[in-house]
Length: 171
Image (cartoon, rainbow, N blue to C red; front, side, top):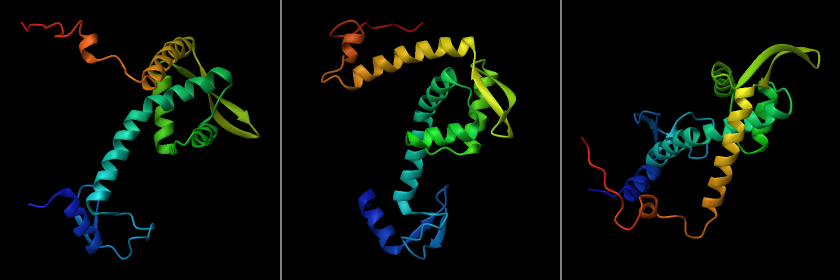
């Protein structure tokens, strides 16, 4: 049985190309041809997995960014995409607009049609519930920041109430 490193090397040498579901699409013309939709072997499938999970991880941070900017001024989708790109997030309209609509549905934002630079745009502003959520999010982010930068974060045993931890019985 091969290790994943051996399999990666074998597939890389062969130039194997796979789609997002892991189905072989034949041989890749060039490893450096970025116009190809497919990815390269196991490395490609792993990177797709990582990117998908990073999107889930960063989705909360993106929502916090939206609330921060909406608390300072009305925002619109294209402007927010540019601002998020400034912070290193690559997010397209197919991701951002559903996120904005969801935040509006959840009462964090409200929208209205406004004239922005001579164009009609849907503009989002923060609601009272959005401001309350932002206050809570700031506290959580500050706490997380402190923990990320601690040399020795609190152990799970301490969180459970001591060395052996508090045991809970299931009923």
